[in-house]
Image 1 (spheres, one colour):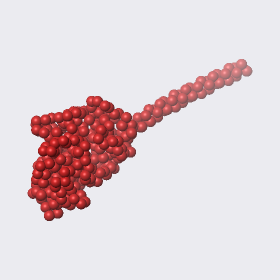
Image 2 (image 1 turned 60 degrees about the horizontal axis):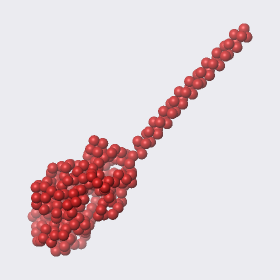
Image 3 (image 1 turned 180 degrees about the vertical axis):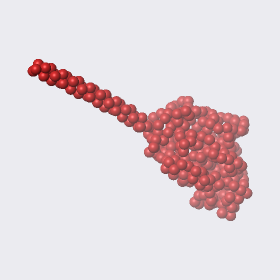
Amino acid sequence: MRRRKRKKQRKLIIITSLSLLFIMTVGYAAFNTNLNITAKGNILEKGITINELKTKVVTAGDGLYKDAQEGNRYIYRGANPNNYVTFNDELWRIIAIEPDDTLKIIKNEIVKEMKFDEENHRSNEKNTYCIHPQYGCGVFAKINGIFKTPSNDHSGTVTEDSSIKEYLNGEYYNSLINSAKIQIQSHSYNIGAVANLRKNGNDTIQKNINGEKMYTWTGNIGLANVSDILKASINPLCTSATEAILEGKSICNDSYFHVSTNDNWWLINAYALDEGTAGYTYDAWYVTHYNGTSISGQFVSKGVRPVLFLKSNIVLSGIGTKENPYIIKE
């Protein structure tokens, strides 16, 4: 009887021990799996900060470069750098990482065709810089004081905004989804005139930048600069706006600005000419493929590719290719 009782007790102990061992094994496995999932999740959720994006700098070929002209700034260059980013549920491309760590981006496609400025949109009495109001005016936004060309051979007042500026910051901005609007950083845009020095010669990208920076406008949505287009080329012969528009040359159209679209589209800078500048105040610069040319001035309808700045605290996922673009993490 006692023997039978001891047998039962031993059996109970063995069963209990095995049950405890099973529970501990299953528990440890579950705990370990949870740790692995959490760890992997944390790695995936970390994303890429703007500072980490700067570490991807190259010195040759397509990719992210240190800006040679503008100090602590980084720019994408070449025919197909990995600078695709999703914004507003659409495909855009990163132009630059600015010194304040905002990302300057441009829509990968044209949103509409329109004139830079409609005829008589800004009357001659109020805007003395533009002497042909029947053709519109090539200055993007109104400015305080007097607007001058880089050579100071023509000047006048610009007291009202262009048609394209009003569209971008009205109808177009209002069409963005709310989550996209939150990601935009209101920013300064360089809207000064860029001169075509076909008579005086000796043009440089730095001179073009100096012209752009003579006047600024601060707001949500703008357009790309002339210098953005020039700098994106990796052709050493692409040295200035003047060189870019010389007939029969294609020295500046080897960048992603040209290969991503075959259309003509507006830039933000007014056009100036070193001979008879006053007669060209209705012109603004634009990107074109005509005859291999990169940029020129005109006042008829052309494409609009919005440009804006993303806030510096955003975090990205993805690798920047068209198939796997950078995505702004919520």
